[in-house]
Image (tube, rainbow, N blue to C red; front, top):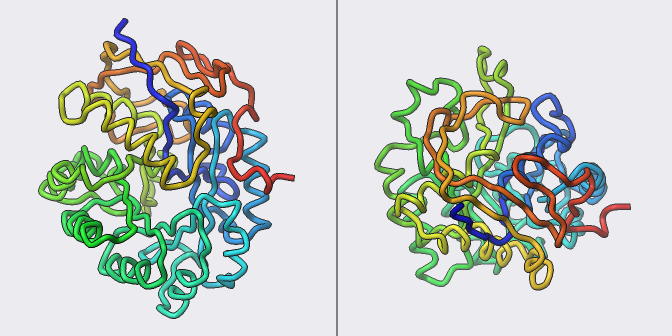
Length: 360
């Protein structure tokens, strides 16, 4: 077996769906599958019901995660129209970052008022970054506000040439900005929509083939790979108003290992964007804890991603039929074997909530 040992890997953008959307997926389902695909830490977004926008709600979600997780979990706070920025800022020590939705989303999480947007940039104390979507001209506004108020800005799921070029220019001028890209924007484009239909609908939408090429050409600007794992059931996707979003937790690492096999990435590229950079950007535990956590991969394994049989409620993937290289054989979390040869060995609660003081 051609074995490769990787450090513990971090997915900086997931949607755990609890509380409020348990019919799509639950914490108890998600974490065993994450650990089985080599991801030992996940960072959860705040667009649950209710939104994770206060210390009390953050604490409640942390208790849910602590009871079910077999991998480590960090939690984003959300900025909402209904929440005082100072109240949100008070919860900052227990969050991995502040998520601001300045583009299309649902409910009170979308901020459209410039004065309110400025208030969140002015009051956020860190240490985690402010994370925003890359979509539309508001990216330039957020870059300007981040510089004005001395904030670290993290740009989620970059998908367009215009976005990556703007981020490159901002970095060249010394801006404190980082960004992430998803496998579905690296591998898919709008040409795939006739085949995928509603299962190809996501936010941001699939871009042109030229945009996809630009992402690969600017990988040096991209700091993190992230799934934006956003599961919806097959029935929801087949309905008259299919919600945007695709699952990705079981396919990211195989796709990236395939890119390494094909020479499109180096193994160091993968490790930097799934381990070193996420740890630095989101102030995750380092040192001894990292040395005690690692993933063993069989790089010689070759197989096709299936149409079904995924260990999620949605049980589908936009990458069905893709031939991939590399399979996780063993995962060790803090010197304990938690996954081996297809079997999850960790009990619920073996993972840690990174902001442990929130959990009572």
